[in-house]
Structure formats: C-alpha cells, structure tokens
Length: 364
Image 1 (spheres, rainbow, N blue to C red):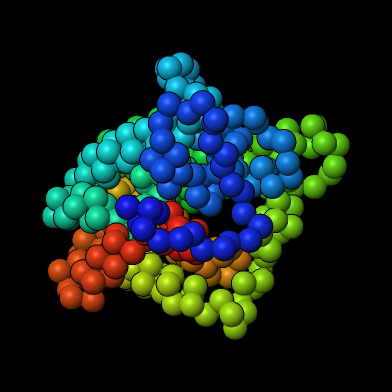
Image 2 (cartoon, rainbow, N blue to C red):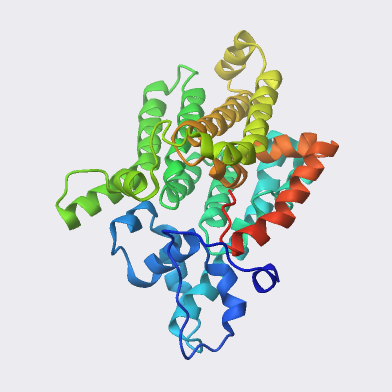
C-alpha cells in the first residue's frame, strides 16, 4: 500500500529489478518485494555470479529460490523468481519461529512462549517477508541451536555450516560449536577424540566462506577475497569506514538493537553459575552445564555480531542480523518487551519498516 501511495526515494547506485513485459501478475504487486538487496539476490538466483558485486551474496538462498522457480512454470520468468523468493522467505520464517520456540525450551524454558511472540513481532519483520536471506539463516541457525539442545552436535554443525553458506556472518557460529565441543571434552574420558571432533565440526562451519572465495579465485584468477572486495568497493565496508557524521541517523536507528544485544550478554552472565561449579558439573557429565556453556557462547556470538555491525559493516543492518541470526536477541526482547519503550520500538519498526523499505528509503 505504501509503495502505491508514496513516491520512491531517489536512491542512487542501487540494483533495480525489471519486470517481464508479459507478466501474469501486475507490477504493483511484485515491485515492493524487489527493493535493495532483494534485487541482487534474485539476480544471482536467475543468472548466477556475473558482476563483482554479486560476490557479496552467498549462494544457498539463491540456489533454493532457483529450485523453487521450477514449480512455477505458469508465471513469466522474472516474476517467477520474485514469487519463489517471497515464498521461501515467508515459509522459512514460519519454521524459524517454531524452531526458536523449541530451542528456547532447552535453554530458557520460561521465555519460550514470549520468545516465539517476540520473533513474530521482530523489528526485522520486513526482511523476513521479502526475498532476503534472513529467514533462511534464522531457520537454519535456530534449528542448529535446537539440535544442540537435543544433544545432536553433528547435525547442529551441519546446519550452522548451511547458515555460513547463506550469510557471511554465519561463520561466527563456529564459536558456539567450539564452546559445545570444549564442554564435552572436560571429562578426561575420550578427551582427545572429542577435541578432534570439535576441530572438524568448527572447520565445517568456516568452510563455506573459504570455499566460496576459492571458487571466485578459480573463476577470475584474481588472488583476493571476492567477498571482501565486493563489500569494500561496492558498499564502502571497512573498519570504522562508516563512522561519519552523516551516518549518525543510522547509528541511532541501530542503537536499540545493539542495546538488546548488550541486554542479552548481561542476562547470560547473570545466569552463569560460578566457574568452579561449572567445571565440576562438566567433569561430572552434567548436560545442564553443557547447555550453560552453549548459552554463554550464544551471547558471545551475539556480541561478536553486534561488534561487526558497529565497527565494520553498515551499522543499520544490526537490527536484521541480530534479530534473525542470534537467538539471545529474541530472548532479550522477550524479557523486556512489556516495557513501554520496547513496545514502541517494535511497533515503529514493524509499521514504518515495510513502508520505508519498499519506497527505497534506507532502513536497517
């Protein structure tokens, strides 16, 4: 509705999706779903990696979208990708909520219901409804956390590796895998084998970004990180590169999300048992102690993601990276969501976010 009511902001240097001349669906219906990164992801799904900028996007989401288009032969080619991408994002988001609920039952059972509600009203909701990779990353990442709660470390590591095939920051989940593996190796029995398995599982998670850059190197013959080059040359990403006076509104926009990441870390530290007791419980093989270590690692992952957004990336993306990639963010929102400030925060982002996004206004 906002796309029809308000004129588009004159955004420059952005990818624009072009509809088919013989489209079965009206342009006003599909156009709002093709803004910003959605156009890049849909183009990669349709044509593969063609330009240097394409290297900034990881392949799993475009591959899934490309496969789903095979089920839509009755649509014109371009709109087929828009519909497929929108379907994949929304379907993955539904399953992400269910898996977040299941994972929370193992780590923070008191917050399970409120976590599911907080995720349904996530401030990053617009990015879970359009062809972005956030929903797929949330589905895989929360599924991995749920599997760790169910003591399925290898399956969890496989899902975390899939997250790293979806988004670059997915490789940070190696911290969680490492913490889980080290907690399993505290008992002396089988320690060497556990450490070996932990190394393999951690390497599995960081492998996708490395493999992607090696593939780009094989294709182009240029010895550099294609992802880092695309981010720096295409979007000006770099250490403190975004710390400019004109970006202050974007820092304000990201401040609540960064604040929730801090709350998540504080809560994890407050819930942590003493080091002496934790080590004793781990030596005794107490699974609850292992879950405590994983919870701390999840908070550390949220802190690392927040730090990456604050010091390296475009800071406004902190909202969607934290909301869709870090379960402690939703735990924090669930714990403070009854306070007026956070209610207004969620309401503002849920209402204004979609309107701004589809009119090419910068929004997280």
